[in-house]
Length: 543
Image (cartoon, rainbow, N blue to C red; front, side, top):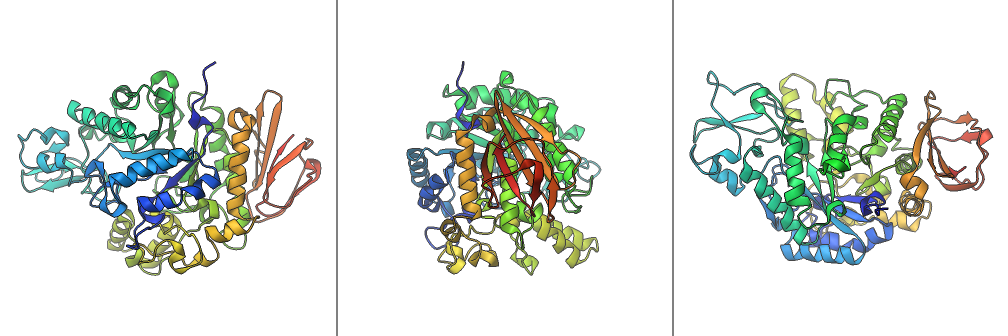
């Protein structure tokens, strides 16, 4: 029987380098800062680091606008630093996963610099250019970052396509040279010793702009299969190289096409169905709605049970999402309890868990008092657009406080010293003011902390085949406060029970406890037939 690939048993930790650790006092996190913290990550027990982009970039979208895929941004360090990080991480049993942006480049990438020079330039067809229609944009395609997805270029009198910032022109994947160039980028990094890639908005590669198609275009899977053959599998490591596609529009059928091992495309995808449950349907992420626990249960059950052709990527937080303890938990009086509950709920499921920096200490959303303190292009564009629509500053800020991407991007809170120990200089974005009470040093010293809870969860997952492979079954499906499920593998069974709200609950589960594996309250013995759940209480036990 073939051995399971390493990433099916792994826990992966995402680092947003700009906000992780600054080694030289310029206020910006860097690669040497990551190297400094490898002992911490090893102690935590993670198996891999997903590193948000560190390539050359003018930073219009914090590094997701790449001007050189095979070089390092000066603010982050040098290629020698990157090579040292790869080697030193491997020495500690930690693989490096690069964040790769294949849908678009920076407008400062050499391909685009050439492409915009003239209509007959050899690089013209590397991007998507169209003539004006009646003196206006070619069609009504919109940018994710507000406004039109078309930008007029005076030099040649045509529009170029950009589904994101106008400084992020979309690549034309119908061009064979583009596909070959990106496969070469993959090989470059595999040769340097990385073990995989997180693939930014990979679902957009097959776009057909003339037919108003963005995600999931007709040739998308052909492109990814080719990228697998010419890139991901170029070293012959096959499944050992983990590939994670960011797919905002993926349902189970779409995700299965990407991740069915027979198709030889991707290892897993980030799908975001659970991440849209607290927004008004059809209105986008900024229109807030209360989370219904029943809907969250249904989504997780569907992906745990029906998604049988692929492997789940389990996550709450990342650089694009607000802090989960502020979003679905209680970041005030029950911050510790609810952060642990949310961790246990997710890490008990089948799949590969991802932890975003700071999630393991229960970092919270931030509420800056002025719009000037925000750095994210999406926030700034949205704010200006809604102000022009006559929406009040107060209402817009309420949405930003809840959903803005900068919630995840404030500096990592290492200790209670100046700037949370992140930098000796002025941080590129303000530190959350609660760093004196929420930081790594404090959590290491307190054995009952959120951090020690995450560390224990990681240890339990690594040693328990039932959590790694067991089948998922929902329990108490109609309860509006309790999220409960079992995992079963051969003759082993694990029960997870989570009180999702600030209430007490008396419940009766007709089972006997063999062993309490982990709980966020003091629970040496548990009577499942007479269980009194305290606010945000979470239990994992063998039954």
